[in-house]
Length: 393
Image (cartoon, rainbow, N blue to C red; front, side, top):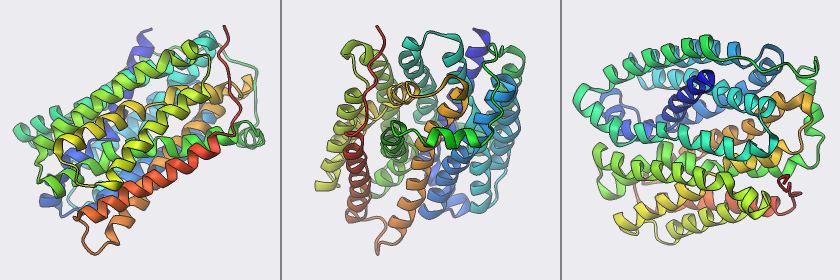
């Protein structure tokens, strides 16, 4: 239990690091000259490096266990990247720092899911994963209004230095407190284990859904909510912090609600489908009217945060089709899809916005929301063809 607590705290920091740029937007604009394209690239590379590290993490979990995998990678890359961020003198340094932090955060959630899969009843996987995600989403809360107030009082560099020290301390706790579960059947397949998983027809619709369903909530909470509110409503850091705080709370509540739904409704597929259909409808409201008023925009962000946190149920859906000796690689492959999709769309959305004649106009954000809506709609159509995995009674 102490080890899982240490991993959960590390996951709070992981969630913080993927979302805090939205609040620092004004400071990074003014002090470092970072523009929307720079921040989009930095945020996107956080997700891309996180995603690519999943293959290393998956093999390491199966071979070396979660304790060493999480402690070393999170401490060196996560804590080190935060130090680079705190001392950045250019947008390029921010990009490098976010890439390192993304790689460092890669093993944290997967180490926890590996322990869940090996040590606990499979019927509890969805609810344990969803509730861990809910707990971790406290990082989104800290990265909203509390971060804005801390930056206002102390400045962003001292705050980031403190977070770097906290990351190193948590990594040490993971190294000392986590206990590896009993080893499963030995599997020396290495990367070829992923090839085995990719041959599973049942996994493909789930992976495609995972690839695109997290991208809207991650992109809006972690990056675009800040520029959107600043450009169209002249919001400062404190107002951006308050609105993104409501979205962060919605993400926590959404994860808690999603957790037991698969068992209550005896389906995983349709829980995921209808939840993300509500996200699609909220995005379409933004497309129809990209300037709906501050109160309505806040409500729409809350709806997206509440309904866009189906991660735990999606993971449980995919987990049902994984062989026992490839659990580490299996959960990291599905997670790769989730994070890679979010990162790729962060990068592409930045290029899409930068290509517009007026990057601060309502029309630009209409195109941004529309791109998320089209891709999520396509994912939902593919997911309709997936095989359901009814929870065991």
